[in-house]
Image (cartoon, rainbow, N blue to C red; front, side):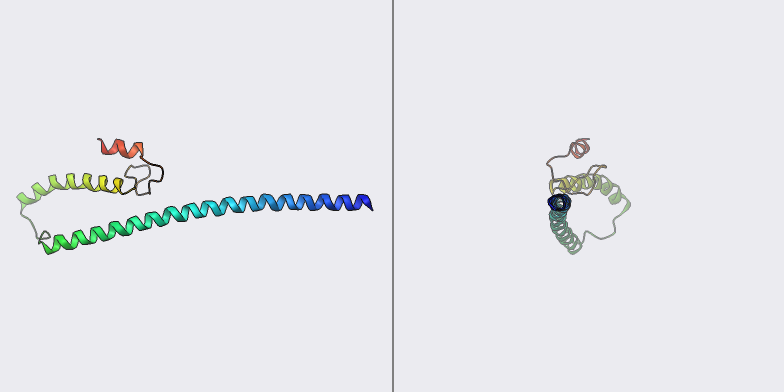
Length: 123
């Protein structure tokens, strides 16, 4: 009788230990999901802000008549400007918290500066 009771308590202890391990695993998964959700919410917010800014810029350019067709000479000048604009756009994206390097391009920077991005900007 006493031995049966002791065995039953040991089995309960083993079951409780397994439940505790499973609970810890679930907690880790929940924490990971919460962190990912927060990161995605921040990224979504920044992308919405960027989209609003870009849309406003395009509307302003169209209103100012910058969407007109240009002559061949003008196109040649514009090709030089576009290189600078592209660099400026990448620098702006980086300053807004996004990676511009080929390793993590487009992902939100969550841990400060990225050496790959900085190396790319300083080329």
